[in-house]
Amino acid sequence: MPDEAIEGHVDDLGRPLIRLNVVGLFDSTVSLVDTGFNQYVLIPVDLALAAGLEVLDPQIWVSLAAGQRTDVFMCNGAIEWFGMELNVEITADSGQIDT
Image 1 (tube, rainbow, N blue to C red):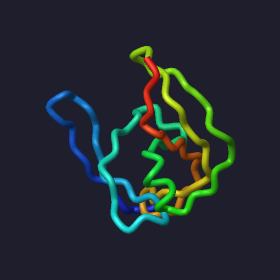
Image 2: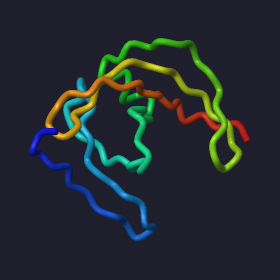
Image 3: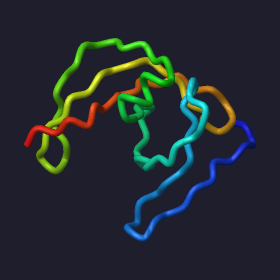
Image 4: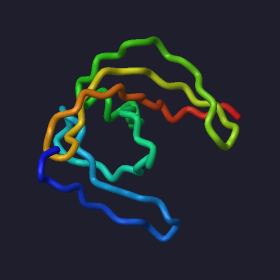
């Protein structure tokens, strides 16, 4: 693994946050770290479009932990991870919630 570190902090709600660069986007975004990171990333659909990500699957509905449902699109993409480009599956969330 490269010597480059990823810096972040834990907010007042106890959530681990880092700045993450999605390849294709001009600026980094604050991201919540899933401590069981399995190479899947969730971003808003407008950022996925801005990054030029290729949509793999048509719109699908998923259930969130709080019980709501939202529609998402699956995309191939890449992030910068410890100084290297890492290919990941990116879920693009439309933000449309169905309760």
